[in-house]
Image (cartoon, rainbow, N blue to C red; front, side):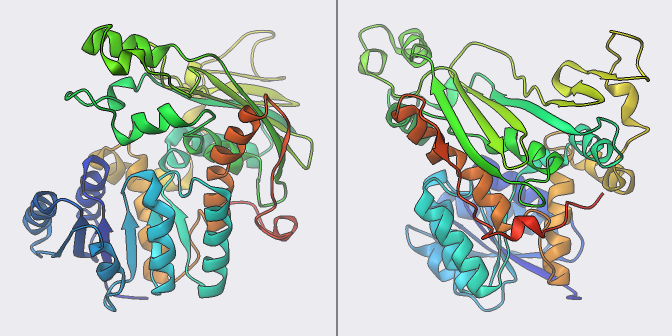
Length: 400
C-alpha cells in the first residue's frame, strides 16, 4: 500500500476548489499539481493548497496545460472538474498515461465517448471513477442496506429526478449564456441524469446482475428560459427572444433486463425548490426519501406512511457508522462528498478497483445522448447498449 496518494487536479472553479479543499482533509494525500485555463485561478488554488497542506502544488495554466499535467510520472491520480464537454477527453489521456481517474459528472456526453472510456480503461487497466456523490448520501446508502436485507422484497420500480431551478447558472450578467446555458439552447433530453440514476442503479444491481435494455424520453415545450431572461434582461433582449431547445420538464423511462422500470425527471428550468424524489417500490414496501416517508407491509400501520428518518439509525450503512464525524465536519452535500472521496483515495492507495467503475460511469452518463435521441425521434424507444460486454451477468452487487 502506497504511503502517499499523489494527485493532480484539473479545473479550479467552484467545484474544483471544493474538491481541492476536500482532498486537503485527507492524511496521506498530496496535491502535487493544479491546472486551469485561467492563471489567476491556478494561483489561487496554489495558495489555498499551500495554506491547507503546507505543500505548494505546481502550476499548469492554459488551453493545453492539462496534457502536461497528465504526462507527469509522479502522479497516481488525476481528478477532473472542468466543464462537461472536456471530461471524457481528459479522462482518456489520463488513463493512457497510467493514472487513476476521478471525473466529475457526467463522465461523457456522446456514445462515442462512452465506448472510448470503456475501451481505454479495459486496455490500460486504469480505473475511471465518475465522482457521483449522491450515491453516498446517508439516506441512499441506508436504502441500499435495506434492499440487501430484503426489506422491500423484490424490487419493481424506482423514480428520481434532478428537479431544481438552475436558470441562474445559465445566464451571465453581461447578457450572454454560460456553457450550461449553451447546452440548454442546443439540446433537448435528460442532460443531467447521474444524480438521479446513480443510487437507483446500485439498488437495482445495474451492471451487477441486471442492466438497462431500453429507454424512452419526452420533453415538454420550452418556456422557463425565455421567462427568466425576460425578467433578468428585459423582454427586448436577444436571450429573451431566442429559441431554447431544452423542454422545461423531461421525463425518461428505462427498462431493465429483469423487468424493472425507472422513471427519471430533468427539470432545471421551472421555478421550484429542489426535490430528488428517490422513490423505490418493491413487493413488500415503498419508500420516498424526498418526502421522508416509508411503508413496509406487515411492519408499518395499515395503509399509513411512517417517517423514513425513523429507519435511518437502524439501517445506517457501515461507511456512515465509521466516517460520520469526519463527513459531517467536512460538509459538502451533507457529508457525502467526504465519503465519496474517502472511497476514491482508498482505492488509489491500494491500487484496487474503484467502487464506481467505468461501466457505471458510461451507463449513467449514456442517458444524456440516448434521451436526446429519443426526444429527437418523438419519444421513440431507444435500445440501451451493454457496455459490460456480458459481464453484468457475472458481476457481484455493490457490497454493504
